[in-house]
Image (cartoon, rainbow, N blue to C red):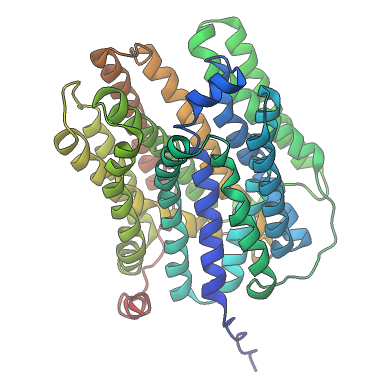
Length: 478
């Protein structure tokens, strides 16, 4: 006689709100600093090239330590690691806000990234614990989780502008503290617990993969200044690759590795993570340079620029929550991932034709909505495929891998497209024609990355049977 499924947690939707808030916050922290950077540069004495590390310190610590966060979730329980991450995030935010020197500021940002690296995989593991045995609810939960990312990115632009203008730049960091306190107060009563498992933590693996990613990003970020033909650029880049290779070698020999290499034999795991990596490598540069185009070429202020991104954000949230789950039930995951990445590429190709004397309504809105539609179609199916491909006991690892893929894609894609835009004139502040040429080159490069992602998904993903579309439609309408 089969064992009946466990009764659903009565507070699982409250828990989902906290999980979505976690996604919202870790993404918001990548965008909220943008408007504050000029004032931080003056107050703390950053050099122009050093200022980018306020962003990079967070993203590299976040992306580099996600595998460790996933492993810790599997060993010590996602609930404990989720809470620990919020404690570290709040502490890093306090340090970053109180900083009076460059190294203190970067330390605070790195600590925020460490907290995010604990929060993100634990959040996805908790989501799978709560909804993984109920496919109808899981699709809806993943849609709400996915929609929190663009909401956090746009909210960061808004809040960064408002806080910097009406308060002071340290408050872009302090805002995390009350959020953390609310989450920590609610976690004990709404999140499911998991037993502690015996095992070791691969610190050598965590160190090599984090240093490898940091070194590779550093090489790409510095390449426009040192030159792509410079021996220094290639030596640093090769050092990053060597460290990542050392990480793989360590994983192959350890009895309890940070990342069990055999997990990549799971059907569709590699393909789904490639889709997430290339999607992020295209999407984040598009969002970044679109914001610069709105402000530096069209002349919009920070608040107006954030408002201009709202249609794209609202479209993504609606399509992720309402449309994507229904289409997944009707057509399956692979067609949506491929179609979504192609639409994302088409939207960015359209943006590459933006004019120096253009307008929001003609040069930005239609192309950005097409890109948003592509992102909405591809994100949820690729995320769900990456998570469901792993064994249940490796949920934290699968969460860490897919988050790593997205964050590494974000960092490397932005670094590469920044180099491309600089090569085509985006450093000529005050020259709309030169700036537009540089931004157009970045949009075109990002479109190529999305197109490569579509081709890779077509070739690597196995077609999964689509579910009956009638029952999921009722579940999503509930």
